[in-house]
Length: 321
Ligand code: AVJ
Image (cartoon, rainbow, N blue to C red; front, side, top):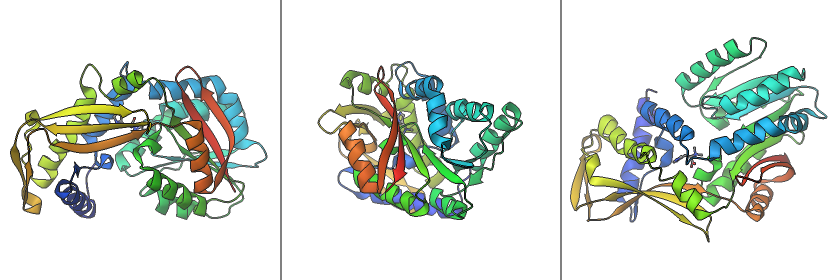
């Protein structure tokens, strides 16, 4: 995906802010350039990365109940997906909705035009009867434009435990923003990865093939390419941990030696001491009490839950209160 100069300056600003802070941090929202998106697709196929398969199992085994809950009591449905990716999981639900004759239109929203184009050509071919309207842009701008009281129920999907990348306060703010653009009859469908054996979680973020390591290091490469940085990737190593008291998995890039990194586009240098960490990503895991509290603080209540008890993963359907 090509960055516009506006995104680039936001990126540059966030890199300056993050690398000037103590402790240093970079934002996982910048992981997904073309190479980062490709690496994430590889992560989803790793034996250790159970999340995608856990959600897929819920969709294949409970699609009837899920589709029923989406459409019951509604004339027609606008199925809106925030960050659809390659759509493999969503395809299961779409196929079922079509076979049940539910009157719906699918609205994938993504920041990447390329991702949207790929998804719509795949779905056009796979489901010739599907009404699909991809939207490129910011989630809330697009949602605002869809908020036209057309009498159709909006079902907004945010899958894959993507919510886990938000700190609690940002997650609540995100749900409140969503609440503002939804009406009482609309629904929110969210994937949550639950607390489980800490070893299972650490393995998912520290895979044996090193794909997750490459995924993290790719952000340094992106800074080198887009901002003229001189990060030497061999001088940083990926480290993943899970803290069971907070249910939080975190990843870091650790400076293996004392070094100075220069970033030309912003005309700045940053010193690293030996073993200094850069905090890269949080992947929050949840207890049921946390989901309950998040829904209430966001202005919703849990209408129904679809649980994978083998992998400890929940897709939760919320209704506005
Ligand atoms: C896309 C945010 C769900 O946190 O599990 C995968 C991203 N990072 N491996 C996650 C990710 C490292 C992923 N989400």
